[in-house]
Image (cartoon, rainbow, N blue to C red; front, side):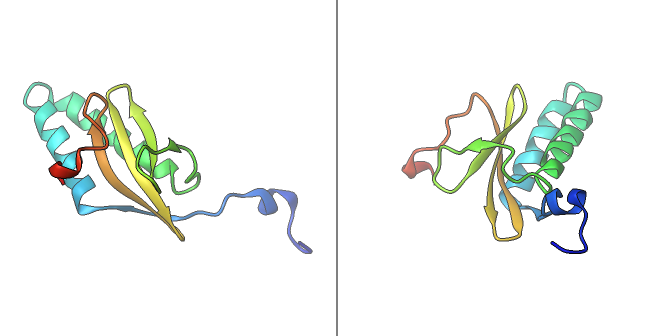
Length: 110
């Protein structure tokens, strides 16, 4: 590590954050559902999703090991979980789910 200082040597490797189509649709559905009652709360929750997911770019191991092999789960709010995986230099947000929702779903539900 000649020529690098200690801070550079311990800086986490930043990966690219990618929201899958399904995760974007989950997020949109949640925002629209909550906005029916409280548009400010819907926007605040959506911003929280973005903020917490953004942290994964610097810390992809932040969430717990997922219930589906190869995935991780990040609790972003007491009622919502981001399901994601890490593939090479990319974190893929796969789903945004309500914590009360059955996960993983039955095979018949795919």
